[in-house]
Length: 331
Image 1 (cartoon, rainbow, N blue to C red):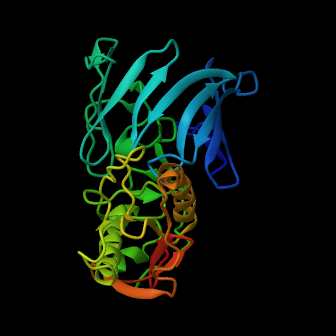
Image 2 (cartoon, rainbow, N blue to C red):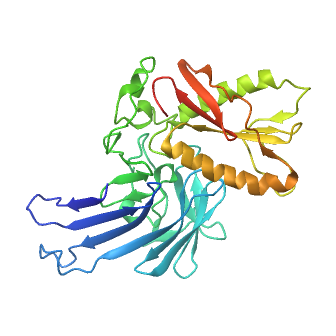
Image 3 (cartoon, rainbow, N blue to C red):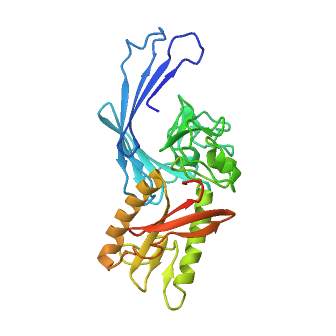
């Protein structure tokens, strides 16, 4: 999506125009907003407001994240990123910490001392329905744009940016088709626009292409196969657990083989999955390389098959990344 023009009353006069730019990996890098502030029906006499996003594609979340926002060339906001985005600093150094629920959605903003933040006498507390629609608050008045699932929300379009696609919580649909065919054994996956296969309570989709609930099932199935091939106590292997090693104490590789000093990450075989894998493996090299660990490029080098829930999946090793997809749909 590169251009959005908004005419909410249908009178033919544009109220806003939004233009977007993306990098070679398809990640949004800028947004230019032109709004009819004088309400004369002409955007030509308005000054566009450009926001540039400094993207960190190599961070512990495994997904491209905004590190800084620059408004018309001036630093407007910075983000603190760990295994999630958990704080932002606005102009003037005002710290806003994002308190989240189990689904990853921001539910409250607090300051550096842990006190609730208010704006105009209203406490910054947020509630959502299952699909991400705001309950009892106006997203346009929220001090953060990281709302439902802690993803960037645009109050002008009403869409949430999920990297590969934009999501509309009012309809529970994406703005464009899923390029993959779907799996006949998983009928919900045949829907080209449906968000998280119609199950937003149990699933999230940070890439715009991949239902994370299905990802957990796929990861569990793949690690089960790995446990069979690397049985305890012959091998000391952890799966998605804290490494507990110097310089990488809280790092959680999907597979960490302490016996052979090797590790693997499990990612969906999709453009966004490969992008996330590249970032994740670069981080793992920084964390585990000095400790003598290397990616394991050999396990599952030949494609293997298993079942995630009820869906058959295929997976294989690509330079240490275990790439998985359903046999009918690249997720």
